[in-house]
Image (cartoon, rainbow, N blue to C red; front, side, top):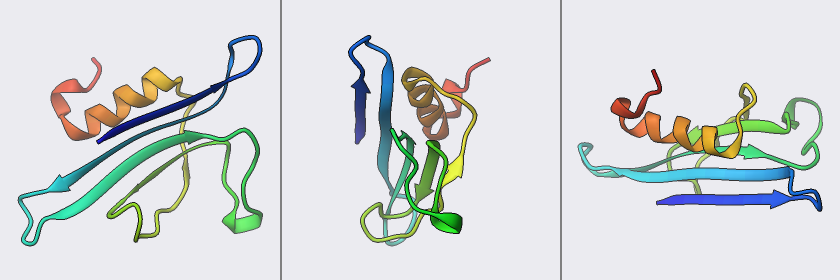
Length: 96
């Protein structure tokens, strides 16, 4: 499953976005879910060690039942985040 959410300001500039991809590992027994997501939030969330940068990514197992650390990423526009996520699924999509 692929998801995309973009919030623009009045000047049509990106204020926030979320790009995510979810799948199923069928080569495992039993099959297991996985996900990867890149989020740009409008304001910092959390505090101290629980806080995270505005632009960050999540990777993990079941997105509804597992903890995923928030890790900062280099600046990515929404289409670049989508390209990165797709390359995590299919190495043939890795940019040259």
